Image 1 (cartoon, one colour):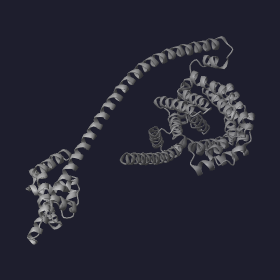
Image 2: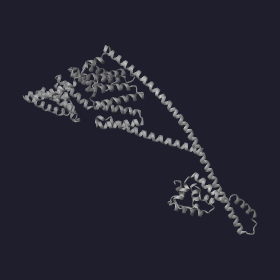
Image 3: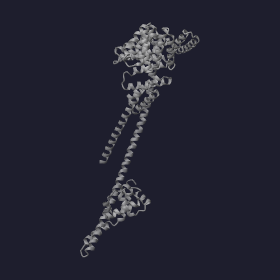
Image 4: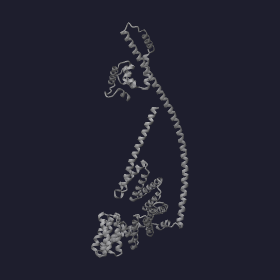
Length: 575
């Protein structure tokens, strides 16, 4: 019972140790994952491939440790990086990770997971130019935002912004501006800085729509709101836009002020796009002032920078102005070359903007009351019902299969339990047998001890006879003779001892005899040492003095080549 309790206690300690070790490893991995994700979030200011490697490593570690919140973050960050990287394969993988993020978020009880998913999917499908899907997810995001109990205004602001992005990609400017204004109003309610970014976008669209006065109002509002934000890139861009509008509104001095601020930011921060727009703006100012030489210098500066960027529309306009300046400088041949370059680029840009069936797409998603939308909703509902039915049948089928395998598994489990019981009975029988053999060995050892005591008695008696021959020792002699008769089978007892010893320690003595030049007397001592008996106990059993035992053990160590620092008992415990 004590042994059993000791084993149970050791198992409990070992389990606690393993649990602590596992918990320590999990915490270490969690820290590493958070560090990798923090580095990955800075992907815009570092090598994007390296950022992807970091977040993929974080995803693997979070999956290994089954840390659901870190898995969710990993899927989300990786999806965003892939979507911004671009390319069909990256967009497809981004969709997969956004979907995984949605599933995990719902498991965590994240109520805004579906909204976040809808917005992300809308952006990805826009990049893929799959505008029906992009619109569907954008409208879904608006619907989901209206159901929010908390952060409703922020959700609606973001959803309308995404919906406006889709309309902008479809070149439906009126619809885009209308939805951007809705987005701005919701962000304004909660005093979110996103309001100023949306105002910037509205101002740009209005400028392209030739609504210069209204555009100026929105851009000036954004400029004042973001002036102290520390976002130099957006301030530089807005400054260029305000410079352009001031120029169109014949306020040249204000235009110079804004273009000068943009040029300063662009040069200090090395923002190429800001530099291009500011140089182009100054070229237009000098051209308006009939300073053709200065205009030519700045237009060449704009061309130099724009050639390093993928700004096709800006390059077209810069080339057109360059051609106009050359023409005014009476250089028609050079001007004609720039006109041709401008026209070719403009034709390529027009092809890129040619999106088929734009009107049909708008009709599908903009008007929920027309017959086409109703028909589409019926198709969606029929499709949903079809999939619900299919999934229900599939679940029933899988349930039947699961029931079959569970039943089969239970049968196997019952057989395993029976086999376990048989094995336990067999093990118990073997233990009982070992216990019986050990008892026999102990009995044999006890008999040897009795015989040794008998020999001691005989030796004493003989000593008394020798020293006191005249004394009457008849009684003692008779008792000793009786004991000798009882224990006369000493050799038989030794044989029995060796038999029982071999049952407990099979092949031990046989191995010693085959490997070493060892006597029968030495074998007896080796057997006692294997039983872990002390020198004193060996003295008593073999009826020899302690010195003789030590000499015999020393001789055995030599025969067995046992190192001096190693005891014979230790040697036998591993051999």
